[in-house]
Image (cartoon, rainbow, N blue to C red; front, side, top):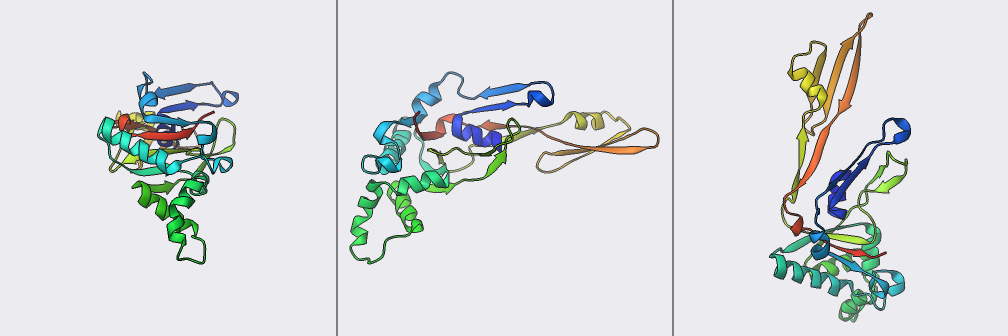
Length: 231
């Protein structure tokens, strides 16, 4: 899940082991090897254009999204329909004056302000994009810090349908079982996780390990677009 979300957020996967607990190992899978995707598919907002509360009067999230959707269709023939972002980012978008002003005609017949769900529904109707907040976290093996799978201050836009697959391979334990080592028995779950049991020693004892070999694939990185806050 962490690898898949990294592709959606950055176009890369970086994995590192904890050097204090063993050999330091680092792998980087760069799906945008020539930088073309970042140049053509990632829009970076800076200054008063960023979707921050302090920029409520100047930021234009609706127009930014519409421009991106139009560009994706005209330049790549890609029809964007979905978006991934955090709740914190979604809250910033609907707090912008552009969204409130666009809803102003609807306020005329109301005595109460719109709630969050109504604002999000309006944003989706205005942009043609369905927004999916994603706030799950993982505890990083590198530093032990709880971290969001998807970062704040950016949005990833996607077309309908699957954009990739999780490729699952055989673990070393699976190969041991396949070649017939007598003291190894394995079971592979539908998720790709392998459970292996080893019998050894006198008195006889069983050791169980859990392992997995997997890597996400991307059918077409050109169909993934991002709007993000610049440094």
